[in-house]
Amino acid sequence: MLRFSVPDITCGHCIQTIEKAVKSADPQAQVAADLTTKEVTVRSEAEDAHIAAAIRSAGYENRRLSA
Image (cartoon, rainbow, N blue to C red; front, top):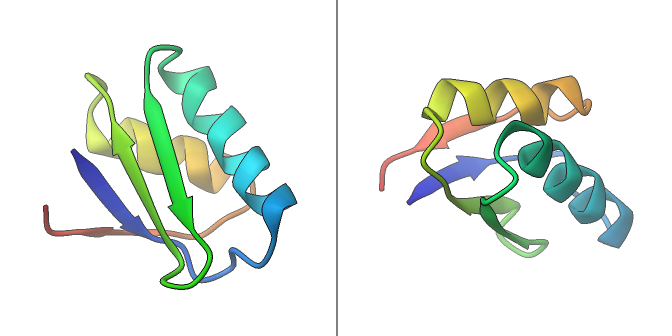
């Protein structure tokens, strides 16, 4: 499981955009975002750098958190 801090998450649209970006990197990924903690949790076989890059490409800076 991968966890990312994504400080710019502010609404449901942000969550949908991030989910779409992650699934473009790994269609089998499971994505959960929390507006309160501004964290995204991803279950994926893809490397964390690949997932982080997908989130960044959607316009959201992020930082990998320890598992």
